[in-house]
Length: 107
Length: 120
Image (cartoon, rainbow over all chains, first blue to last red; front, side):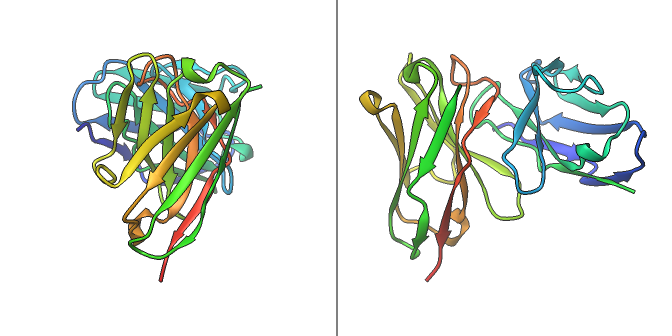
């Protein structure tokens, strides 16, 4: 089974800061990688699929990159509404494992 | 509009059974993979099971294999998760999720979830 790890597990940054979250797969998954945002008390929301394709309606300050085993989610200018936990997910093959999540807060 | 509505959650004793339902609307039910994802309170996301209609392929996480079973009623656009031998570690919100045209694929549409509590 493919294991997904994320770092950091949590971070706190100022409004306007650039934030980077890293996701690593235990084996190559090409670009079959999704990022989800889950705000407190809400259902997860798909942000990015194919490692770098932004879902419709997602602000352009979000971007994704990577292929194979190493991936990155970047928020170019952190906003208060970005407070959430972010999960990466392998969707190349079952089990479609999620990373443990990165909790993003505001300083 | 794509909608997924879960039902059937509740309080159940360890070792007992529960059946969750997911009723879908706004898309052709058996054209898209549908999955169950769970989240224990305050914890991360765990994929549980999924079905690809075109191939008939059903997959389960190791943590539920042999205890949980997917079934469906296409006429009612409904998917069911039969959960037997429930354990305290199965306690979670269970989300019904629509995937893509194949079993893999990003999870673009989520239901609101139904809470399963396993406790004596």
